[in-house]
Image (cartoon, rainbow, N blue to C red; front, side, top):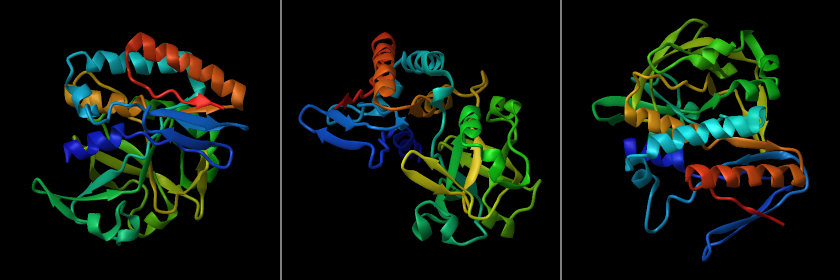
Amino acid sequence: MKKLMIILAAAGLLYGCCRIVISQDTAEKSQEITVSEGGDWMLTDDYDSRDSSFEDFLKQKDAYDTLKETYEMLNNAFGGDYYDVGRQDIEYLGKFPRDEAYVSGGKDAMNQKINGQILSPLESLQVSYNFVCQKKMNELIGTGEMFGKEDYQRGAEQIIPVLAGASYQKMFKAGDTFQGKYLGEKDLKFQIRGFFKKDAGISLDNEEILLDRMLVFPSLSLKENDSGEFQKILLSVKCQGYLHYDGKSDLEKKLKQLEKIKKETGFRYTIPKIR
């Protein structure tokens, strides 16, 4: 399970729409993108290849320092234009009482017995404070309230607040708690903070994400008492968020900054060529 989650955390996805066209030269492992308007670009890496993998990188003795420095430089360089956002499923612990429509992977992934635990990966989205503000997600809440700044400082040993899609009102009420595994490493306690309005949705570049069966929670903060393995995996997720850009020239500028971060930290970001 750990191996699967590391791969999922490290996997690179480049989101675009009619504004961004992606082609990959597999021989040179380069990317070219065409940009005309603003959007969000997901940071990717080239660790997974025939000769290496992201797991190999995580085993290196300087992996933590590389990831920590990279994450700090991303925030310093891009500020509110860097979204610490990811589609990281909460794996519900115990027999899931609803149907497979809530489960990432459908019926086959529901109530799997893994290492003595019964797990169901639920469609989830971890979000950062600046992303929530940019998308005005507080306006999408039907009952309850949006996360406060202090919620983004919570670590894995604390109760993590969750805003659930409207369909979850058949299963939970505000204040209910449940256990879930996160990143294949930690068993966390989650608490329902409230529910989104029916048919509420947000856009992440070209993808419209319907929140009816989604669990949304604040991106976790690193804590000193976290295991070294968990810290590295969490940092790897944080280093592969989204860059918001306003048109071609803005993205070109941001990619030059990303190239500098890549050279300084050694983290192997994939930098596309803009046509």
